[in-house]
Length: 351
Image 1 (cartoon, one colour):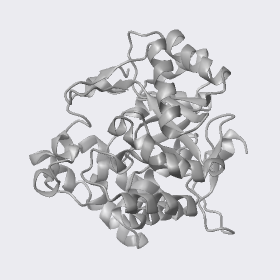
Image 2 (tube, one colour):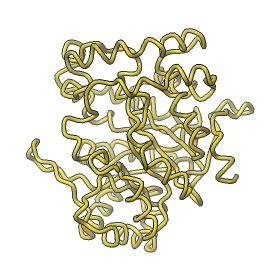
Image 3 (cartoon, helix red, strand yellow):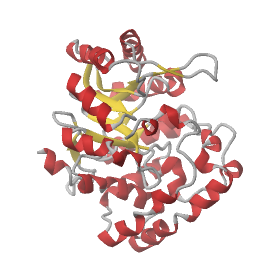
Image 4 (cartoon, helix red, strand yellow):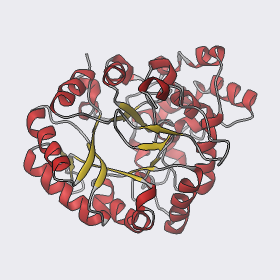
């Protein structure tokens, strides 16, 4: 399958009922056109029913989802440990992605970004041990420390490929210029950044660079951390104390009310398709593939089988040009930043 063919990745395999597969970047692994973000299983979104989460992992594989995404920072390693038995049972069927670059300690307020070569090696050894594997299929730099040259950080990641500990490299939340610079050190298979109807900063430079280089784009939070499901109008009243969205600018107070009002066209289009708002939001990000000429594999996160089934069904929805036009203005009217401190993302470096 050529890179151009990958740009039209909104079909399903009629013979099996599973979602279609695409190549994750030039020379990358074949994966389902939708992956699963596993972060919420371990923290950030309140308490988890572990039995239901295990069932969701099984449901994902049954639906043709093969890209499973975690990170060493999720639950401070607990997420990787949670996935280990599932990985062991299905190692040859899945593409396992994890990340390094965000350092946490016992101090809940401490959070640092580290990309130095020593930390790269320390991190991969920890992830290999917790996941119970000899090799990681896709290893991401979770956040960029601009003070560390790519020659050092990506160079250290490239050494892991040469040693057989990692198969493919990825980056998260970098600009187009940074992607080009890193790709010159070692080929990058995938770029993972937030991309949704509510968050389109990546279209300034990162998406174009990825298309130019043949790098796959892996949108995280394609449902705007759940806001695009239409379930929220006041996070303070509707979310548990353990849910980090209570403190996200877009979920707070007047911002939340204003953003909820933006979903009217999403609901209208959903009704026309007999779908949910979440499915329309996912179909929109999936169709960025054709719009921008690159492979797009969103990784919505869920802990429930019913939501997993709903999400993968979105791959069968094709939005019309008129519907896409109706959705186009939404992002420009969203109130509040993605994070309380946007300096940790590419937005502050994007040109």
